[in-house]
Length: 210
Image (cartoon, rainbow, N blue to C red; front, side, top):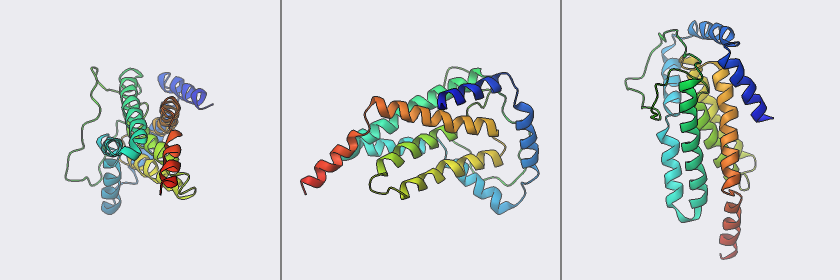
């Protein structure tokens, strides 16, 4: 079902069927900016979606022996997702938002995104949303047995990053929604291929030896 939903959104984006609605939403959001505190907060949130932050966490998890499989699953999911998204943004042709953001900005330059041998001229799907969704999905699953309710709090991460990208006029609702769906698809596929459920066998063995 998720794959079908993503393919439908891809068709709507490539055919520019939803562009008029996305640009209308963008125009509405552009009228809300101006509160310096909110503007800067949204700037901080959007910086948290930079590609190196979740990758850095995945590398640390991979280095630690007991979380190596989790780190590997997370790292590969992030790399695969980021590369595929970068190429899709090159060739889907769904233009970036055109309105200029006039709110307060952080006194720093955003980090570069994933490099690919093509010019990224589109915004479908939202790269930051894909990465943060992958992170929340995989790490949330890893914590689900110890924190069956608390693990869902990780979804605050992609939520605030995605909202900030919309607020800063960097993404459209369509690209954000497609980013969530695509992130879940990638995380689910890589997790199954690398058998992420084996991380729980490791935890049971560790508890048995205590």
